[in-house]
Length: 529
Image 1 (cartoon, rainbow, N blue to C red):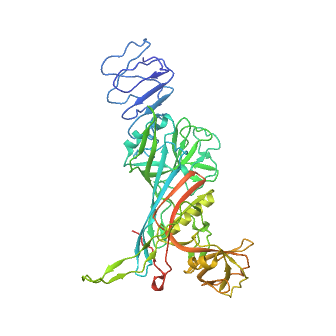
Image 2: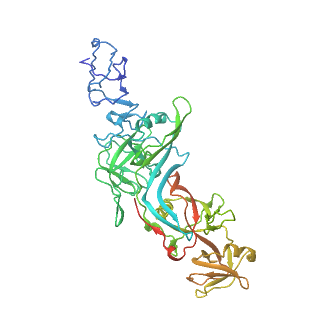
Image 3: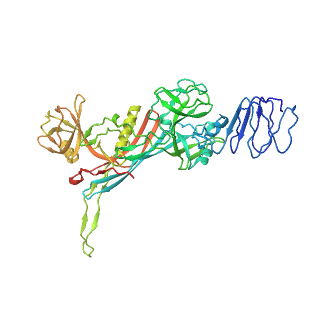
């Protein structure tokens, strides 16, 4: 075979001989590690068990047990990798790219290159940590123990594609190890086909803030949390998933319509291919996988990924009332629930009736709300709200949905300090809901809004709602008054359900807070651990 050019050779690097000569392509299947030398023009196999057949035979049988093949000279060399340090299973790549285009030769890491099935939402969990202590007055003292939330992503894989058949094997190889995980919620698509060696990718609607480093070097300073820019060795990487395979590349610059690469593109990519940013992550939770038919598997995979960059707080334009932001009302998921809790202490253990001491009970009403963000701007605003609240730390105003809506019967000047109101069955219902201090939203007939703090509501020639704060402008008759309550989140872990990159669903549970009194006016602390 020294004077013949192998046009095509099919070989299986395993434990049994495989025929092959005079074939248009060479395809190898590697079980333990990929072979090298995929850029040669001639293929000269050697075996230790028997000499090669004469050079004029039509078939060649070769067997390799422990080592890779020598450098191969063939027009095409395709490798299909099944296990160990693979970036994805059953995905056709070329040459050493079967390892997953490792970021650098010294760190061979796998890439979770399986597509997320958007038939189910992508679940992103943000977990803060807050210490909540109830004071004797019924108020709460809260301290932040985690300023930057931990982040999990739950992928849905397996939508009757052959490339998802070995996702369980990939997870078995990389469970508990660092790997590169894509962010499908920030995916963009190629607007034009890119040839091999291209240095720029024409994409649609790319946001430079989402294509950050693999993992930020976050540190807490006196100026806040710093280090989102990452390090030079921890650059910005992307994965390009096409119909015939995938590859990764490193970015040097990000524009709204183009992504610039540091090195030329290894393989061509057709228009419509998905481009997703990569971050470091680790799969620590067991995967929930189900086998449908032989060769098909589907389920969920959860990974703990790198921290998300803090959102732009300037994009948040929520109104403020008494130094607390006002949140919009959302769709109700469940009816509000309330439980009264108190502590009873026995003071006398005599056989007679003992003395007991009861702490003042406090309200534990909770309100379940579901919010939908239908655009990138709304998603950014909700991320800013969540980062400002930091789980159970900060408070906000929220419409309670329980108190009846009041109607202003007479025009009110800003200097009056009260509103003459009327409502359905005001003598029996209004005093029950509006007697405690709270806040309200005043909606004018023309749509203008203003906010005020309320004290109590009593009957005086109708209904009179006393205000604790001044009015900004005159309130005309016919305006609506909606009651607000001070709330905080009842949980530190927040689940974001990404139905698609532009539709986000958030389900929150808010807990009503008592009105602060005396020294309990400021009960918030910001300490990180």
